[in-house]
Image (tube, rainbow, N blue to C red; front, top):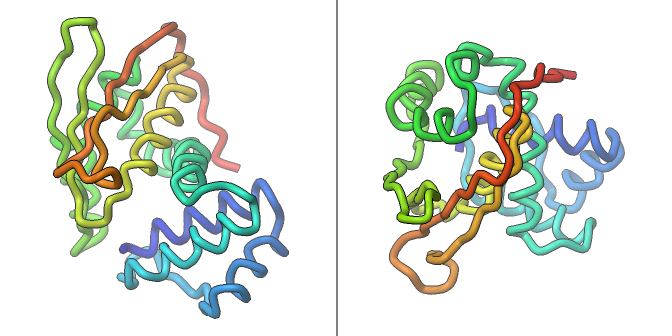
Length: 189
């Protein structure tokens, strides 16, 4: 896992719960918390931090990942506005991940193991996103989608009809746009 993910997690935790909360997670896990954005770290470290946050917040690990993804999106928009500016909707943005965002991530962060998404349109107008990754971070992807919707001023409902955590070979997320809105300015605080 690239250090940028750990850096984002730290910023989200500190922004929402304060420095002491981040320090408590590090104490609980025994991790140093020294992550460089370009560094690579064992997936077990993010799993440990999410597990500790799960205990501290009384949330399931998947809920923690979903919360993290949603809260991280404004930070990503602030750091990488060029990924967001060409888009006016969540759907357009999400569909650009494979062809624009992940190739750029791989350039910036050599060795980044990005998932590959498969897209299709459902008969009810939903965007079906297929997700398959050995990391099984579909809840994080779900949170990123919700965070993108917040950024674009939209309301979405994300369903998860197939999930690797429930024995399926891959995950499928169905993204229903409920209300469209205008893009909002990212708060990179």
